[in-house]
Image 1 (cartoon, rainbow, N blue to C red):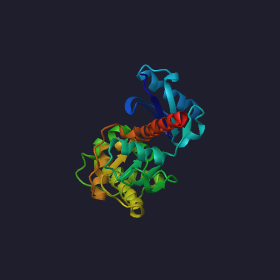
Image 2 (tube, one colour):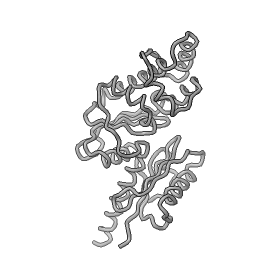
Image 3 (tube, rainbow, N blue to C red):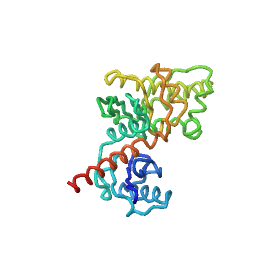
Image 4 (spheres, one colour):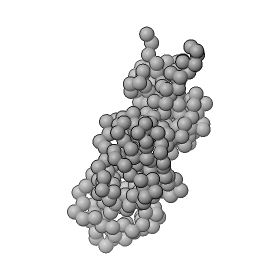
Length: 269
């Protein structure tokens, strides 16, 4: 019996992620840099994921697209919002999750789930770079380190040096002033992470926080950000069992699998 292959494609502002499921099991994925052409981004991400498991486009029976580029996905049978897809992707990995902190390239979301993995409430910051991967990229450039090195450096701090602004322009200027004053880079870096965590904590004032708390998105790979969130919000983050940056694509694939099953049932009836 042939397997039911489906795919979820999450076209984000900085990265395009794809996950392939076969009868409900993860079998392949890809994560490529997003370019200026959303259609090509999705198609390239899908092709890369297919190649990783030696599949062809014709093997995929259903595709769901999500992310800001989902409106430019003619190859998909369905498009779903990223909030819904992140919820389903996190719930698939960890059914006990009730709260999601999602930090992407250019937005941040606070999502609360019900016991069935549906979105109960959410808040979103997509008007300002604060609390996003882009903000951390700018800060990494100030310290002349890679984005991947920022988190480990934060863990080396001996003190948390408060950074008063999470506005990218003002925070950059403030950071440069602190460095010129002779402050330790590690203490400034952890201060930056705490400033972001405080902003996110404010987002959850309306949504509410319930255990278990899951951190998704590309920034979830930043160990310094994870620690700052736990310290500021007084929570314990769930340890992910799968790449947290692929949560949206995974959720899209899960929904694709359900829609395919529903389609077959309707066809039989």
